[in-house]
Image 1: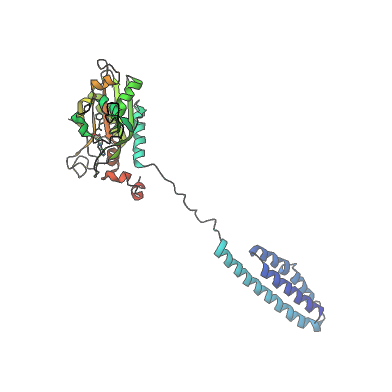
Image 2: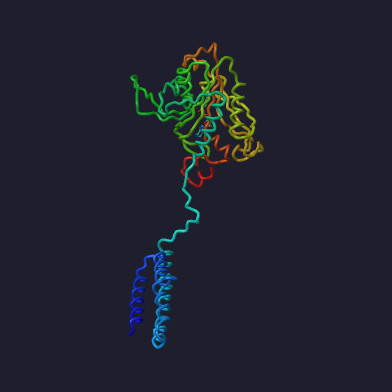
Length: 345
Ligand code: FA5
């Protein structure tokens, strides 16, 4: 074998070995350039074949062409293999949209609570707070509901296993946010404007409109010459801003020991526009809250002179407000943890 044939065979061997070892497309391209590029080692050697004596040139030229074809085929084969690896393992398409990061949102009841806080803050009401585990005194007695008074039956209560010196149970899970009334009067005196929002507890069987644990908002305004007209104006404003539309309200007499007179406030049903539907029991009106003028005994318990000051108070369920706002017909959905329900808000 001539030394040119030798050189060609050796170079072919070297090229094939190095091509096999290429780890990725980039390395393969570098090798292609090194051996087959315009100034590549194989290209230059092939050019030399042209300078060989005629007798030798024919045979060596044939070998050279075969080697070049073989190497080109090898290149294609290895390129395909590397391409396949990329698609299988590491291929990353930077133009595809990314995976969305899941983010939560506020519970509908929290949204309504925040709306209410904004509405009342803008009317000059403080945001008040009170304990969920409450003394019998602030939950009942200070609100003109003495022990053994039949009004205690209106709110089925969870008593805590804790007794005072007289051996009476004296702590309850608060049955309404009205427990904040006398606390606020003691702390801030008169004049006073505040709302208290929070969780309350009743020993109740649940149904579409009743929960045993639910949220209330309490409103309290004490000043000189406060009347039912102030109560109605504030409630109208609350409904208008919470529901983004005006609602008619009407009052019916209602009994609560801590107000005199006491009223039940009804609102024209927003779901059927007063025409009558299952939610308003076909009456066109829905009972929304209890309210009235603060009883003089309660003002006195709060250290406020009832001859100088008067006030109104109201209390309503936040679930009931949210049901009316969003057209929800079962109160139990709020605390069910059902994501299909919650994702709609
Ligand atoms: C009260 O709780 C009084 N504290 C309200 C009040 C405050 C009257 C200040 C006068 C002055 P009542 O038990 O009716 O009253 O409840 C008030 C509101 O809470 C109801 O109108 C209703 O919106 C809501 N509510 C009552 N019971 C439930 C229940 N089991 N589940 C859901 N919401 C309820």
